[in-house]
Image (cartoon, rainbow over all chains, first blue to last red; front, side, top):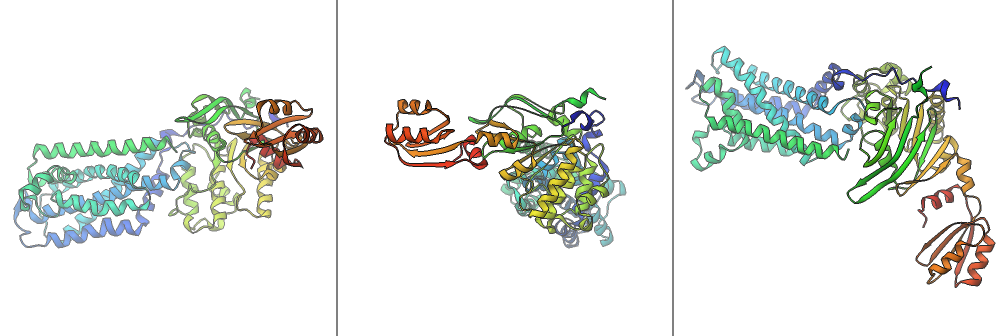
Length: 263
Length: 302
């Protein structure tokens, strides 16, 4: 064999910039999410429908901070929708691991950090979509009322709060592989949303329930997301939001690092 | 032209890999030249997959060093110098065939055009189909398309022709040979001995984490020259074993309990010794073929 004549010239091969992160990747990942009917129904349609029913209950016009109760409900529902969506996105990381796609990706230059960054951006985009849909529906309902800057600020804050749930999605996805993750995350997030005061204000709960609720993951982010409207943000709500974010990030990172050892 | 051209495609030096107390690979030295087509043969659990994983940088050797085309494995992957086709999985069902190839292509600094790769793999016609709706054969073609995108200098294949018909297998190997002539190195894991013999320039036999034979098909067959004598010798002791080993022509002796297996160039002498000097019964003499060579070298008979 005349190796010298036929050998592949390896000296010109380059490593892609940004660890392989690119817009084609992002486009295909987003298209995937938007094509998934289950995602669309549970993360976009459901919160909007809840928004229409809760936001129209009697007393919607009562004042809350610099707006009204309908606005309060609107922010809550946007957070619920965004949390569901980004948790679903996060859970897909584990699903992709289960079908061997992660291993396939390890045979490409894609850096694990670039992969997670892509997923985080997709989670944020999907979260933003959920937030925008709920807000549009709320706006067309015509009951929510708050100053424009509060409206915008609440949307942005809500969006960043959803990263917590993207991390939760990754974490749960790794703990419960395969497609069952959403079956746990769906009801689980609904329960957390009740405890966190997204569906019913905490003031209407018995004191013991409320004391428990303060410790649950949805409480903190809900208070933070509504703070632009309510002008009321207890310190322990901030601690709660930051604390749970760190817990879920650490959990996801822990499961993922365990996992790559085996890939 | 370039000094880099003579670097081996794969260089493993004293590579070991342990999982806890289990030693999966126990010191493998292997050098593959560029353009070689090499079969990697061995029973399940021999360390084939573990070794391939280390060449791909999917896992780190516990000891020793692995190098691919003069780079560390992960660097070689990042440069698109090495790719692999896995037997199952590794695809997203909700992407279309074209999206899967585009997705993969977007990750490399340089690839062949997506359309050309789809055409080469014969999947242009189904490029709009969801991967989940593709047949096993179509999915395998897609995996090939993905692996060939970066025009790799080293291609690793895990049981590549499983599920292919005779015609498909022949086409597949002719394509692989053509690429090898242009300098691509191919290392394929297989359990089809015939396939290894027919299509590989070189066969590497691995067993219990060690390379037990390395050579061309005919060299491996030469190891199989002679015959195998099997017998049951109740209560065989170390002394008898040593005497048996010293009978002329014996090149391998295996004793497991009462079961004795001797590979020898002089089966008559062995049989005579067994029947006259020991309490042997059920004496059986067979001539070896490539399969036996494989089994005897990998120590995986019975």
